[in-house]
Image (cartoon, rainbow, N blue to C red; front, side):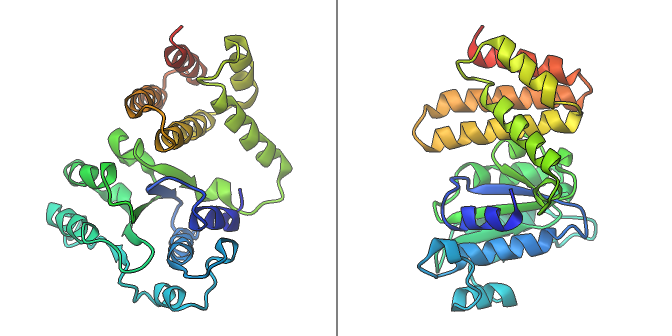
Length: 262
């Protein structure tokens, strides 16, 4: 999906996620993407398709870095964030928004220590309904699985505008395979799908990302929170196995069997 389409989708309220991991290396446009997305969320234009309009007061304040509703977690340590930084950040988010949303941004989230990440878990699990969080990172593997499972992931490298039809078709195939994980389709159909489109470890992790996004959307739509949480936990278990160099197809096939109870 093109970056502009992602911004319009989230800014227009078509996404139910309340926290996003924005993955992109330095120079990939990560900061500008988060800035444009924040503008779109704060934009007061009545037409969702036109956000961010760039003309309203909310857009201009977001662009200038003066919006009261866009809060960045401050880094007080010389080498990284401290627990007091996380506490101050969470306290501000608890106050709520002045406008449409209160946006919390954590730059270089992959530098967060395990202790600080655990401090942020409650904020990620039980945010106010008007709070949206963005975690910018170049290496999401440095984030705890408990953090990753509570966020949707946007990969800028795979989301860049492109004319590469093969890459687009591959992403569509991976997404289709993810849809088969807990569906009614026969196991052989899922096996054939992943053998066709999952060629690298990254492909397997992207497939799990798509599956987790689907389970979170089902949870927000009214499906059993406990059941969806169990499915997310199984996905994170498979992710960890793949990251520990378990055969990717074996891990995905096992995940399919666990999700369908066979």
